[in-house]
Image (cartoon, rainbow, N blue to C red; front, top):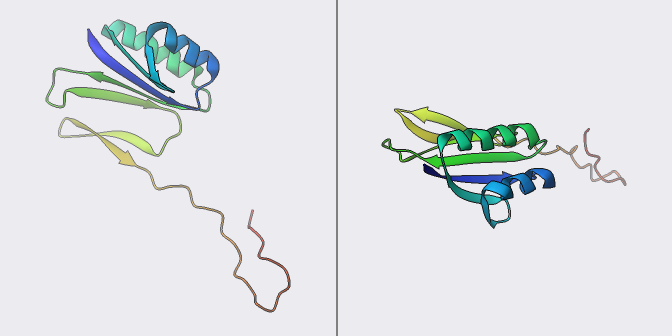
Length: 115
């Protein structure tokens, strides 16, 4: 049995309720527990089925050099990569903000946002 941690963002209430059946919610969207690998996989399946537009990460303790492993779910800037057997996190660049047209001082209108 290993310790697991689940962190969710924008999770639907039905998913939060299901997670609270098995895990202790120590903070909004942060769940902890101590379970077997089989139960951990069941919790992962529930996350996959019910996360909708939210994001989640499931982390658990392991007996390897890193001492932990994790999975991510949903659209997030973070992505798991493994380098020399160590789990690391790679960040995707943020989405580009809306660009505005250059301001013309002679114009009496404000710049418009491009769509």
